[in-house]
Length: 306
Image (cartoon, rainbow, N blue to C red; front, side, top):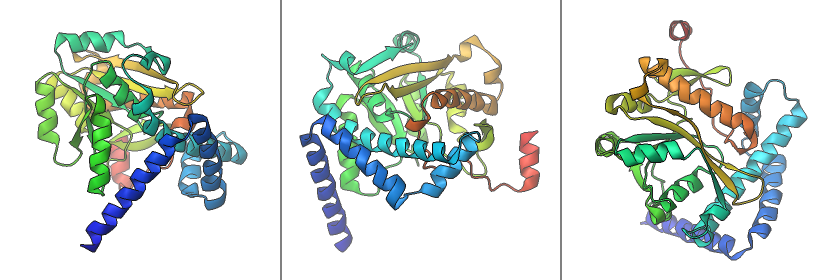
């Protein structure tokens, strides 16, 4: 009982915070994000060790001051991302989405969708991926996104309603494999965030010059269902709620290519494409994740690198 009450109080606090953010002008929120980011990065130093280590591994040429500046910009981006999601439903709709989002390279995926073939969208914790799914719905492209349910069921239900406002539906990360296969068999669109650590038994690929474990499921599903893989990003273009939704690259199994020779080759392909996109705006990437954990024994590292 106490646990349920605690969760409900957390949900009320969360909804009040959302209402407060929505009541403020976007410019006011932007200034607040800048101030709070400074507190998180320079005073509280939230996950400062992890962020600095990741930046040092990804960009070994950067000075200490440059890494600190990039970490501060990352926190500002993350806070602003939350604000943008809170404002998006009120501000962006079918009649005015072009005011907020620029499309780049969307013709190819649209042709594939009209053909009735399944499509796998691959992205990362980069830019405003939540806004990307929202905009696809406005364009009349309903997607299924694979995500872990939130621990608080009331907050999770609210987030699902927000995501589903334009047709985006969720499949649980654990236990959803059969549902994913069913969607692809029916010619649907599945979206994955493909930059999460997959454990020592994952598919080991190169990411920013270091081995990183990636999930094998994306490549396996693409090969099983002959589904094209499209790497997409939603990158902020300077000001809040001004984004470029871009097709970074598309790989179709019907056209062949070395990427379809193995799970590792296909996983390395989309990982490299994501890396190139992140390098264009590294402050918009979530450096708070421990992406380069490697707990494999030395002999396994050598064998899998061969």
